[in-house]
Structures are given as structure tokens and as C-alpha cells.
Image (cartoon, rainbow, N blue to C red; front, side, top):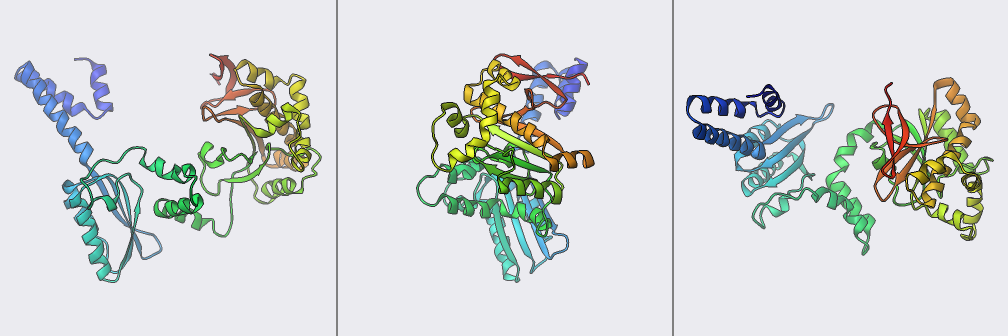
Length: 387
């Protein structure tokens, strides 16, 4: 026996198995004690695998109810399922949210029969299937556990589908699985928006701001253009209007510039070739970034030492230059002095799906503390601060 083993068993929820095994070995014998411990461990594992959570709750301020079924829905869950469904008043509108990875015929029949009976009393039942197991399969094939990638595949399916209307397919998937989740949050924002940041990023289709910042609807006021540029001379009315509106009217707390690897705008600048009418005029606003890159900007040195290619280096330098431009902007300077508005930079490395922090003179990875950049094994790593 070791105290460390007991503490570990307590933290992982296996203390009962440890204690029963120990007592059985002491008072019976080694073989019987181990067998009893294995039997108890298997029983606990089976209970954890087949357990299901069923909760029926009213929606505050409405006559609607939400029934959430989460886990593994089998015949073993019928008593709990039946008891919880019986608490839903007759004649009400009900949203059944199924987040299950396994649904057998008995579980499906219990839910389906209840829904049919509830609708016969004048109520309405709507199903939303978030988990990997689908009700439509319960009657057509033997039950099987859903794949862990099921939800991801469903979300990415319209993106991968190049034939047909991918947008329409995505809307259908959204209504089926996610609209109900967003509805309560968006209902609070229907008359106003309250973003915490202005997010200036590239128009590149591979950049998804809410995903890489783990933010939700209404959190980011996003402005996108080719090369994530803010013209220093203020000649672009659209970018200027967005900046003024976000800072002065929406009172955002942060202005973020986000560049990325394999940027077509940066490739065009490096090649020095014409990109065509309109684009050449726009990319002229990025000339200060190209000049800073060629002059040996500090960010270029850090990026080069970390093993990034020239396009990524220029993209990082461009973010740093845009930060310098924004920090000099009168609207931002006034807001920074009055209420502490901050300006920050990001770089999204598409090949690794990692986001780096870019300042006016350096690049580093994000940590849970203040970090300073250091080069380790060919990539930028962050040294943890002692502060």
C-alpha cells in the first residue's frame, strides 16, 4: 500500500475498487481479492458506460419545456426516462435534445411513444439530435455506438461537398443540430450587439475568427479584407467606418489584427507581379509592410529563426505594421487613454492550426501567463514568466 496510490484512486473515482480489493486480499486471499476487485471494477465501468442523464426543465418566462437526454440511451434507462418524461405537463411545446452516442430500439420506442401521446393532448414535440446516434436508424438496423467524429463530419460535410448547394445543406444541418442552442443567446442580442473586440482579418476562406478565438455569436465585430489591411492614410471609407463604429459606438475593449500563413496577398507582394485591376490598387496599402520586411523588421528575424517561410514572415511583419498604424490612429489613441482600449495581433498558421501572438517587435505562443519569445526546436515557443 502506498499513500500516493490511495490519493490517485480517490482523484480518479476508483477508491471503492481499491478499498474492496485491499480488504478482500487481506481477509480472504490474493487470488480471490484480485478477482473481486476486477469484478467490481468491471461493474463500475459498465455502470459508467450505460448511464444516461435525463432532465426535463421549463424554459423561464414561457410555456415551453426542454427535455435533455445525454449519454447512452438503452432499455436500462427506461425507468429514469419514463419518470422524467412524465413530469412534462400535457399540452405544452417541448424540445427534446438528444445528445446520445447509443440508442437502442427500446429507448427509441419509449421516446417515440411518449411524443405521440404528448401530441395527442395538444402539445408539440420537436427533436434536435446533437449526439452521434440517430433516431432514424433505431428502426432500420441493430443499434451501434456512434463514431466520435460524427458531429464533426456533419459540420464539415457541407464544406467538403463540392457538388450541389453546399450552403443549403449547411443551413439544413444548422437547423437540425444547432439553431436551438443559439436561440436563447441571440434572443438577448436581438435589439443590440455587444462585441468585446473588433477583429480585422483577411478575407481568406480558411480563417474562421470565432473558431480560432473560441468565441460565440456577438463576441466579435469582424472586418475582413484582402491582406487584413488598415490603410494608413485613411483613404478606405469602409475600414474607417467600421473602426469608428466599433470603438466609439460599440465601445469594444480590444482591436485585433489577424494574419495567416500562405496568404495570397503576401505572395503577390513578394513576387512583385500584378494581381489585376482593383487588387493592385488595394495592395498598394501594404507597401509599408513590404518595405519593413525588406529592411529587416524584428518580427521577420523571429519568424525566420522559427522556420517559417518568406510568405509567413511577411504576413507576421504585416500584422506588426498594421498594429503600429492602428496605435497611431486618433480614434484608438483617444479610446486607449480614456478607457484602456488595447490593440493586439495574431497569426494563424494554417498547416498546424495554431495561433501565435504578434506584437510590434516579436512573435510568441500563447500561455496562461505573460510570455516572452524563445526559439525551441524550430518553432516559436513561449518561456513562462515568473511574474
